[in-house]
Image (cartoon, rainbow, N blue to C red; front, side):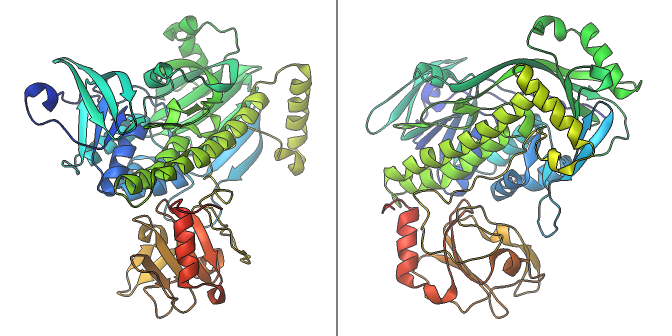
Length: 535
């Protein structure tokens, strides 16, 4: 099977330099990686125009972010690219953990049915970027992609933000109401603003290799502690599309990156893993990692998103997924502020909620990193004892940390969440993203619950008579005589009977039992969710 064919995106002279009318898009986005492109699409689905500026003109080289979690796939589905990702990606939900060459245990990340998307797919970042670039083309009046447009500096005042852009045709300035810094872990804008990452740097180094080979390995995540093929260290293997396998090998803190990347050093390592199968190296990189973030994600009219705001080690798939969760949280809020539905103070909740999410990811990634690379004799003794016990003692497996894989952030603590007395005793929790379930509509068509949510605030009424719904609020009634039927009973099982107020990012912001809700209650919760009132 042919490897991915990299193609350059076209450069066009910006209207500011060609004599045409300058753009008046309210949002400038710096960086055309997955986070910047997804931000543009999210805003476009809400009618907000943006300009995406990137100094490159090709998708990222190498697999980079590959593990996309179920919650991220639900977000990508709302953005219109999840079906393509699912069709191309490698679906998996089973992970296996080894000590030496012996399996300690396995885990199932999605043991129950009734969800549109799987627990994870593996798909190289370059495919995700390609699909998003092509999706941007569906919004020619709302998304202006500008490649070979390098942002040199940014200034702002009370009303606007201005970026100075360098292009092959010269330098120009462009103005917008807000600027999203989606320019990655080495963010030029973060450095310009003098924002330092706070957290922990790990000296451990790892080698990443994308290997092309024919193999009958199942679609699973394999993680080894001290395997015989890589003594004293850790290893990780993931299957990707196009017969590409991602292999991560721990090298130790003293490894020389330049030496370790040389094919004559990489190939013998890979040969030990793949058991004599013929293979070709597709991409090789050496990395060490940080679990860190900047103090605040919002700096007046400049907003930091994704790796420009926070970075984690790669072993829990929390980097790319965390960035997608950022844009899911920010998009509807920024659109509401720009269109006048909400005051600018709503944006402060992005900082509140996503700093909380980043800290959760950093905490889990740091635990993983310390277990994989113990700091000192005590931590090493603890890890070895846990691994030894885990072979025959299931209770010890909870302590094994080969990566606490990405989970959606719970926002029950948020200042936007309406904390009325909550008497529900079901799987769904206040502040969590909604759980999917199969439905049928009035025509008997099979549909998914999550696809009915996300366009705006929605009132979800389940198994009870329709309540008094405030004006201009969408309502979905799931009942035998309602808009949809709970065909398998999973909505009732997961949500119970009652009334839920769902945010545009599909998080539950309020809920009531049927006899405890009025239009006044719903209006008050909606005001809280728009940050018009405080807790």
